[in-house]
Image (cartoon, rainbow, N blue to C red; front, top):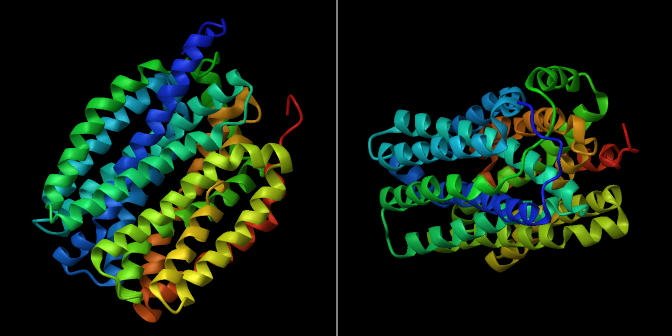
Length: 394
């Protein structure tokens, strides 16, 4: 796809900024709406922790399958058309899950796989658009786009808690979310600006070359660690509060919302911290904050202490993923290829994380299994030097 070399007008860039926020918000709402109803789906299907971990593997498998293909496809379709198509695919997955959980495990697995397939490609496309807008604005706002995602997850979790409290069926809840996402997101992303001036063949070659770049691979590993910390919180906080701290279902969902709210605040405050102290110092500090929160959540003697731990955990994991995306986008010409590779590696956390926590939870309880997250966060702190901004032209 060959695009004009003329720069978009300021009004066009402002419209693209709004559209990018909506894209991030939409995927956040979609994911959190599903995550908020995991305990009810688990109970309906009578799943043990290890079985639930394997069920959650379906959504990760769909994402991991779509990510390596995203770079070349994105080069041909552009981020606007890709996000539109993936929003419809993800919505279809939500519809299947909303009815399928009444039947049994297989349709839920199929629906979750479609959700993951749509979410993975959607994620790469909106991050490439976010990096493009960030460069056009000449401001470090990538973490605020991710705050838009987190705000969407908070909204989805709070609505989910309300649906649980009001005893609204899972089917009605998820079906309603699917309809809204399918209607709103494709319309909103018409405001996106063109991603790049490179043609598709050149971009396809860049994707292959990016897999051989040590810095890109290490950034991918860095993102994987933070994605594991974030994804584990998304998947397991509600279950751990209900089973480990003996909270009721509504309180469990609100704990999930507290985690997401802290992540949102951290991402919104991120640009100021990153501009003042630099990427490396900030991500090393927040990794320690996340570890402290995890320990409070797991070993805290009461539910309020666990809530405080969830808040620190969320704040500590807030900037890892967006910083990794910005680091992959330092060179505009190689941004689509590198973001695709980094996201592909990072999403490995969503592939391995759910079954790992599920199997550990079967042996040690889900609550104690969450301590495994601290190991990867320590690794992220060690390799954080790779997210340092590149000199121009590298």
